Figure 1 (cartoon, one colour):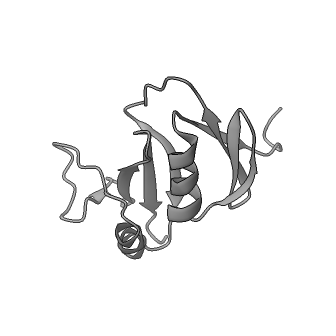
Figure 2: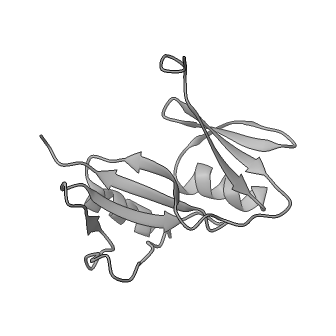
Length: 126
């Protein structure tokens, strides 16, 4: 039914100005549209709608993630832009904040300005 339809992604913000600056200026997504209800970004062909809400309780799990070819290089760019990585007790992240999953994927998490958990993942070459 939906296997051939284009996916849209959603995340919420309580502060559109901060979200706009983060998603556009820090992460580099193109702002396609803004209206009273949402900021609409192009995330490499996927529409990301950052919905404007009056009150926000961010989820404690990952809500958006990106596949990257080189997680170390991406973290370096993110740190230069002021992004800080999340640290979680007991999962064995390395000194940069990267966790290596049992299958070999390398994952790091970071918050957006509203506290939504975002991630980057480098999959092993097969």
